[in-house]
Length: 449
Picture 1 (tube, rainbow, N blue to C red):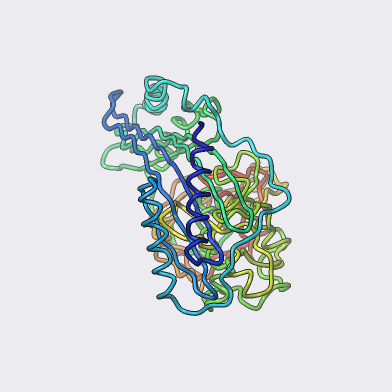
Picture 2: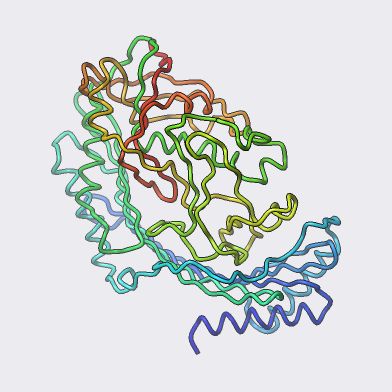
């Protein structure tokens, strides 16, 4: 019997037992995860970690109460204990008429999410990827002195969902990635650089590209100095734009709206940001790191356009928040493991690609700043959208990137920032599950000395 069948059998047994003991609706969620992490420094393996985690999460609904319990013990006795605890917890929760489990969808997206090459590649080959990445960075420029982290990672997960409404689903997914962080120095000046590449396909990893990019990011910032405060054109590289995009991700969930914690509440149909911008969440995106045919409660994933041409279209839902508004789940019941219930969250979340070549975006700027780094984004307020962050980058003069600048600050509100976008690059890049192309802002005040 294969593992898929084994998990299905365990899940079906848990659902059946809970039903016999009084639960009106039951959901069994089983996940088995494996993760490998290899850190290399100076050509030698510094750390290697392999972790496995598996278990059962059980949701039960009795009337208008819901209970949850989980266990790593998948034996017959372990299942009995989990069912007993979930039912006991159900009796302690508040009455809530919106608790319900979804029925299976008629169609689920067909996705290629598991690459056997990841498992079949030897440990030595994976170590060599990290070594190659490190060596490429060191060879790029003699001023690259310190490799802080040269990391290879991969993982796989097998998810099984069975519920009492006829749902019976399994999905196997895998990912792999490389990450490099380093420092370049010249005299007393030291600057940091990084790059990463995460994929669904092992053979698509490009350690040489990552090594060069990380080294370039550090070297080009050597000699950076502060610049006087001025109101100017601002260009955000894709990584920085993705950081700002992350600030509004929670506000586009129905949960935040329903709890009064979203700056988008009550504004569906309103023009919120630049008409140049379209923001999408797509759990079925081809090659997306967060792609899966169904979400954490078995609802089919899909592409959800949240903001189109600057106009707010709607929000992300799971089954619970959808029931509150008589809506349908968007397939955003996100679940990181069997230890928790589905929360509303993003999957592959991104600003859609534009049509402007990046070179042209910069060529049109006579005086401005190309921001390549932000510091302190964690201090931004996701409810109000207010932020004040440190920034660094390269000054733009007469359409060319010139001197490096740092020790500067950018502050304001994320809505105002996105409203000022006047050009969107054709270079959409993902950093994990979030992505953006290069963005140009018509004008913002950058604080310096």
